[in-house]
Image 1 (spheres, each protein chain N blue to C red):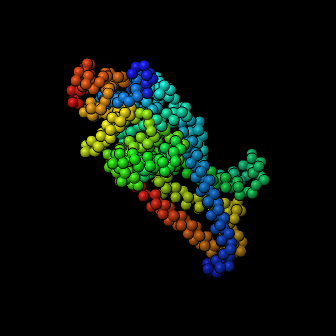
Image 2: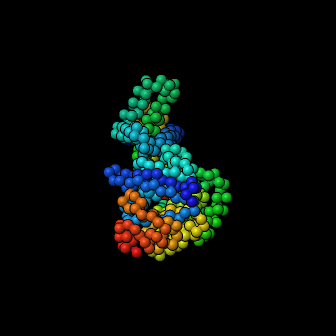
Image 3: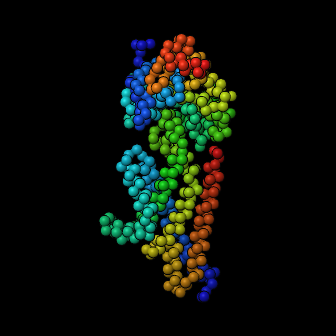
Length: 221
Length: 246
């Protein structure tokens, strides 16, 4: 069996810490980038411009219909061939591009549903007051949409934290990469449970954070 | 009045919804200070006509002129024009995520860049007038239907509009709430505000209107002063409608 889990933790905690920091960093980038990009894609999809709607639909369908790991490989190996500038930056950028784009596709669908869930009368009232289309979106529609979609958005963020584990495949230092390193030291099973525990803590913290925000946003109910 | 520029003028306004011809060509002039009530059977095009006046509904053909300028929904000026055309909806459409005060101050601060304190001061005065000043910090869910509608009226008034459009403002209200809302509208009309009101409240229309438009089957079928219209309707469909509702 080898050393116990606490022994491994005590001996190698700096590696787990580094892995956890990496995971959090990738998750944060995927969440922030995915949310911004996803909002944009959702607005494109709901716009009156047929070309924009078409492009956004294809974007979301392709990225949701193919495995993230395949997207990461394409981004890692193929993207630098067509965008030479990517050869001059850290390889993690290509993996992050795939993570962010993938999450943006899922987020865009959630936000699209959220925007559609807001009564059309809200838009009409805002526009009739002379509010611009963008102010109507940012001040009236999105705040109400966000409240409706917070639970599904939180689920998506939790998935993103877990999906960063695939970045380890490309030698990026996150939690699963810690496992690869420790497997070389003949620690086959202990790191797995430690890593699982760390993921669980992260997702539980996020879940409760979202619950807190849901309570705060429900003041107008 | 005929030598003045109308506040609102429609020229051969037509609106189709797919194969359905809802408006079949309406040319009307509404002058400053006028109170025009629009009545007629459901599905006749009353609300569609009203919603064309601020381009919430884009006409299939024909034009709308506001203060002499042609409205174009593709032009950014449309927002500036809409700021002067207040609208009140059947379903209130107050903003549920904002407090009563924020509902009123949002558009003036955002679009007219009025300082927050000034906008709030004005909002409080307006709330006072409709008996809602004690609700300023509440969210709309705490308001009754009648209070929501009064808030919606005040929200539109806060933009200092030159005309107010009312789209069946009391149709979604409990009977007990109707009177309070109608009183607010009546006060507004008496203060000289130009009002265009789609309504089923015949007594109210008769009392406040300078002119009645009877819209049926997509056209202004008959119009006149309340007295002419209600006491001496000329055309058969008008007579039939009035005999059913009065």
